[in-house]
Image 1 (spheres, rainbow, N blue to C red):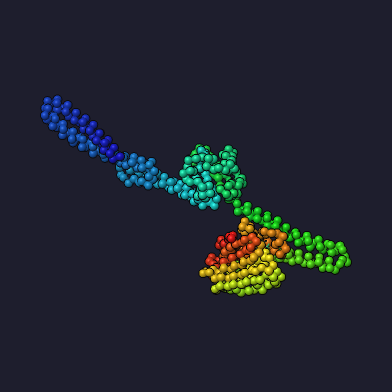
Image 2: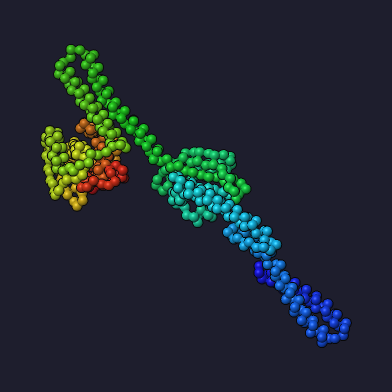
Length: 472
Ligand code: ADP
């Protein structure tokens, strides 16, 4: 701007001094003194040029300051301020500075709002996108990009319907554009080998920079909820089924006894024995159900103490002695090193009972069940190996599910409830122990549970599950 002021002043100086010169020159020529005329004229030109130039600079400088300040504001430099001055443009300075302050404040509040919106969108627990009226995804949070495997570059250049290969999702967005109304729909979307359930919410949104409305899309992942719902339904169906069998049997035999008074005492005894066995099965089932529900509760805590696994094993084998002897099954026990761990002795006994009881139940008579306790650095391994029927590879991950049985009839015959290993899995998680299963159908199964010697931090049950199953 300074250059412009100078050029303007220079031009005006030139014009005015030239005018003065011409006037003098004419005057002097009239007096017919050429040389004097030239000399005086040059002097006049020089003096008048310097005077006019100074004057013009003085006049244009404050105006230039104002124009310069306005240009800076127009260019977005809202922090530029003009120095106060006493010249005739000085009166404009406070207004220009106030304008700058207000523009700066407005920009700050727009930036704050944008930052807040970005934080909300980025931290939203669900994938979220914003589509403009030209069908471009103008904003997608990290969750969305991660879930749909889309990069910023891909998002920038293609319309949403070309980027999202999900007809159900595209349809609801289209419908929202067409109806100009919020919409909601549940859909199952496939991601490579996984199918996930979503509750899709869409709403039209007026974007300030665009004449027509865009659409905001939020996808709530409800896969876990659906799984839980299914598990609950299955569980209710399973419990009802498990209860129905013994109850029907008890009812049937009791009715027969009542209807046929004076029956052969031997038959009566047989019937009563069946009723007793079925009611015992019911009792076991209810006990296991109550146990499982207690262990699965959020408030469940172990009573941590130092426990020697040899003591737990000893107590368990005493309780299972009769059952093993009935099938002429022998126990082989081996221990190695210090077998003390941090745990809950009662819960550990429950785990030992369920696993070793299974080893007996699913083994042929006259076989051997080997139980080993081995210190291995920071852990103590408890290994139970039988020579029983074994488990097929694909069944192994499922045996820890509630009510899952490989052979239903065999499990029922052995008095199993189908809940034993589900309880073991939960208790292992509470102890932060790892479970591994190796099996060869027809040859036997080995359960290895690795306990940490020291109480894990943070307290058990607040961490992730550690149960894992492997196959021989
Ligand atoms: P159950 O009361 O039926 O034994 P569990 O939860 O204890 O229930 O076990 C689930 C299923 O796992 C059993 O029904 C059985 O099919 C299988 N299983 C468990 N332990 C063994 C084992 N040692 N050998 C073979 N199969 C086993």
